[in-house]
Structures are given as C-alpha cells and as structure tokens.
Amino acid sequence: MRNLVGLVLFGILAIIQSTIVSRMPLLNGTADLILLFIIAWALQDRVDSVWLWCLFGGAFASFYSALPLGVYLVAYFICAGIARLLKRRIWKAPFLAMLAATFICTLIVQLLSLAARLITGVSIPIISSLNMIILPSLLLNLLLAFPIFTIMHDMAGWLYPEELKV
Figure 1 (cartoon, rainbow, N blue to C red):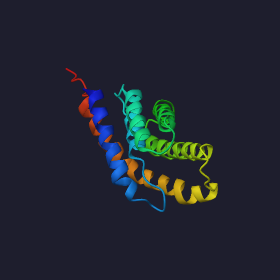
Figure 2 (cartoon, one colour):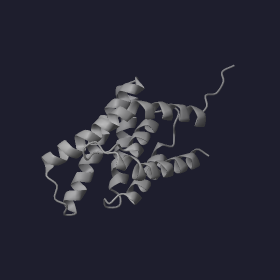
Figure 3 (cartoon, rainbow, N blue to C red):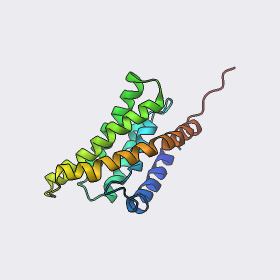
Figure 4 (cartoon, helix red, strand yellow):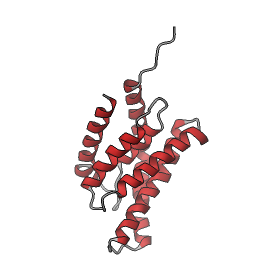
C-alpha cells in the first residue's frame, strides 16, 4: 500500500513538474518538486521506504528530462542519503534539517545536471548557469521546502500511524 502510494505520488509529481512547474521559471531556474518530496520523506521519523520512493522519483524525473538516463537517479539517491544523515546525526529539529538538506541537495542536483550537460557537449558558461539557473532554483526550492515538509509529515502520519499506548 505504502509503495503504491509512492508510485502514484511521484507519477503525479512528474506530471505537475513537467507541465506546470517547468512553465513558471524564476529567470531560468525552476523548483524541483520531486527532490523536495524525496528530502521531506527521508526526514520523517517512522518511514522505512525512502530508497524505494527515491527510485520512483528518480525514474520519473529521468523519463521527462533531457539529461542522460540515471543522472537524476544518482542525484536523488545521494540527496536521500544526505537527508537521512542530517536527520540522524546532526539535527533533531526536522525543519532545520529540511532547509539544510534542501540547500545542499539542490546544489548537488544542479551541479550534477550541469556536469552531465557539459559532458554531453552542451556549452553553458558556469557563471551564467550559477546566476540564471542554480541560484533561482535554490530560492524556489527553499520557498517550497516548508509546505512540502508539512504535507509529507501528514502523509507519513497517515501511512505510518503511531501505535496507541495503553
């Protein structure tokens, strides 16, 4: 049931990302909903299906992206690992961990996609990419981090209900 919810959720997110969010850029940067949902899911307490949901999100993002297959998979797995590490080792405050993970992971995804574009022969000046794509995407992701974390917190409570203590 939980994995089916993840598959449907990331399918819907991929549709929203490719049709609506990509048409509302800030300069040339757009928010990455799938990344934010993966980070928010990885920061939940009782969740045990982070890696499978990361696989779903990375697969859907790879299908609608022009980047080489697997760039998003690798980036999202790294980001899920960073989010889990931040949750367990560094902070007990989940909102701070969400903001820190969003900042770090957005940079990772953007830099990996820039590297993939450079490897495939697309010539993008680094400074222009930083100013026009990476920083606006970072701002949009940070603005959406709190609402998405709240949505995923509620979803985790629904999918992983706490046992009643008697």
